[in-house]
Image 1 (cartoon, rainbow, N blue to C red):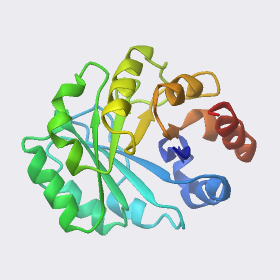
Image 2: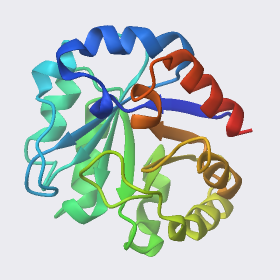
Image 3: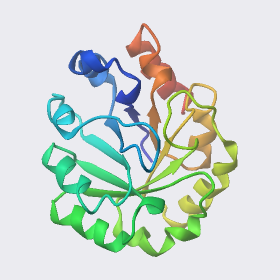
Image 4: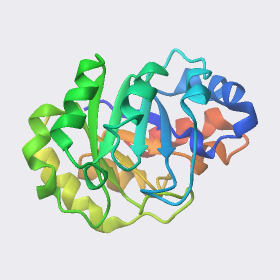
Length: 212
């Protein structure tokens, strides 16, 4: 499957989001947006208004690291311009309800699991989603070390769903991206390994080259 690079703006400079996005836009496939509510994970990140203000031709890949996204967050971020919304299996009281709510907004659906969570938790929903996000760090903070124990889950998922977009997020750099892609991931989220570099074009291109 085609490799897609999704820079995570959680690692970008908050006061310069549009400039940061513009710099990587020509070389990327999606913009990954981590939303945190201070409950599912301790930090709090972007408000819907901040994401709406980000101008880009790329799809906005919104990752809801929140409790009960079906109550409020799905509507707010769909209205803010999300092209795909990913919910966490661990954060939903009713996964089917959350999936249906995203579908009704006319956008794509993703579902995510944390490193300790079994793939079996989301198997009942695989025919209802466009993408699965496998977290390769425990969510909440950028710059963490890649957890290779998640790779068997990616391999199993790829066997189950040969044509599904499988996204990986956490500790991705030139050294770890090859492991993820070899396991079956094709949507690559990277934050500090892109926005932490002075030459962002070179960083994206090196990451893409390392994924082959």
